Amino acid sequence: MPDIKTVGVMAKPGIPGASAIVSGLVEWWREHGIETRLDHEAARYIGSPDGLARDDVPEGTQLVIVLGGDGTLLSAARAIRGRDIPLFPVNLGGLGFLTAITLDQLYPELECALCGEQRVVPRRMLHGEVVRDGRVVASYEALNDIVIGKTQIARMIDLETYVDSQFVSTFKADGLIIATPTGSTAYSLSAGGPILFPAVAAICITPVCPHMLTNRPVLVPDSSVIEIICKAPGKEAYLTVDGQVGEPLIEDDKVVCRSSEHQVFLIRPPKMFFFDVLRQKMKWGER
Image (cartoon, rainbow, N blue to C red; front, side):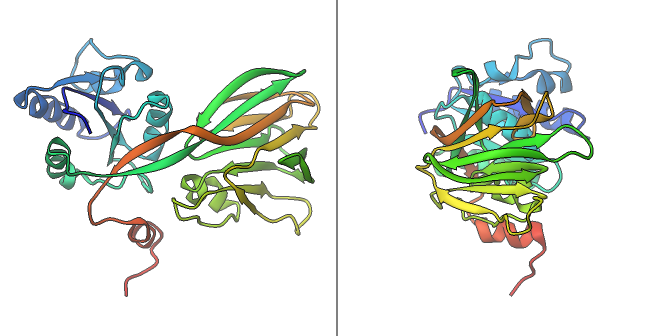
């Protein structure tokens, strides 16, 4: 990591005690001669009118601190827009698979970051495009997943699916999840998908409540191009990216997913590894 001159702070709204946390961070960085750039939520906690749009916070920063849960981190990952700026995720939310740094570890880990001694792990993102009438009408970057789901209460949708131009199936289901290894512990897991080690070079295709019980999750190489043609009439299908942004789909829209050329770099606690997180968050038990 280059010498830190400017640090960004992004925060989840409604965090108890966040005013003291944000003001403490601003003061700590000021004492080290480092400028802070706050998003609107972080600025609101300290009564500052100088908050920035989340997408603007990373400009000119060498580190971005994320205060919240995994949802806040997913939003921050998209705001980075492929720039090699490490994210420093502090878990002030709920489950927190990705935000593994606790409040007690905040300042010791920041000291490590200042000294260049932090542990930084890369996570590959997923790129998705919506193709309508042969034209790309939208594109997205996801850290967890890209999902096509139904909008009606009791109607399944048909999703014609190809991998590298090879026909897989027309899934009749509530939806289809295209997940990264990072996203394998999110929605895909709840839909019956496998847990993938983050370094595994794969993409997971997980049907949601399929009509055919033999439709199971499938792993494909991360070099694959996955194409899903929406056969749902009207606007009965919706595209969701990381559970946060998206748009309605119309019949014959094609959703194309492939590994992104971008990665997200996460700062992790030095002694907290993937299986430690699984044991802690999923209550797998100790030795």
